[in-house]
Length: 132
Image (cartoon, rainbow, N blue to C red; front, top):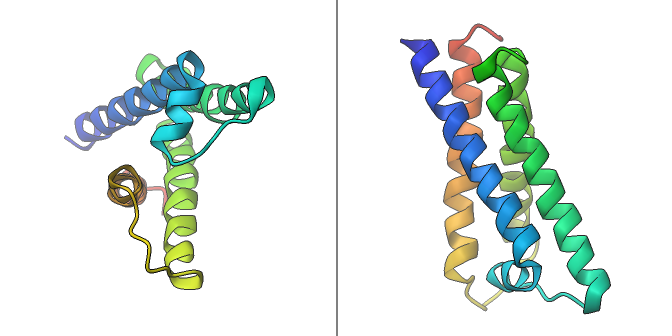
């Protein structure tokens, strides 16, 4: 049962990472705007494609790899924990260190939940799969 849940979560993470990567490569300006960022010319677009596109496509492969026997499940979960854990840590740190009166956009608010859920699920599955 744990294997089915783990594989399902890895597939969901993989699809989320792949979607993020493909969208940011196809439309770097629109993707940046959705995150309240702005690209500056072609250089800014290349950087969004690299930082979000290339990174998240590679991250997607790390999540799909255990499903086809190319990577250990625990290694993929560590990758997802590092990504989601790092993102939620930065987001929570931003709230604590530099709280502002300006409200966050709905996209950024959603990412708090997504990153928190991803980090929590990764950690829980690492425990369930005997990593600790």
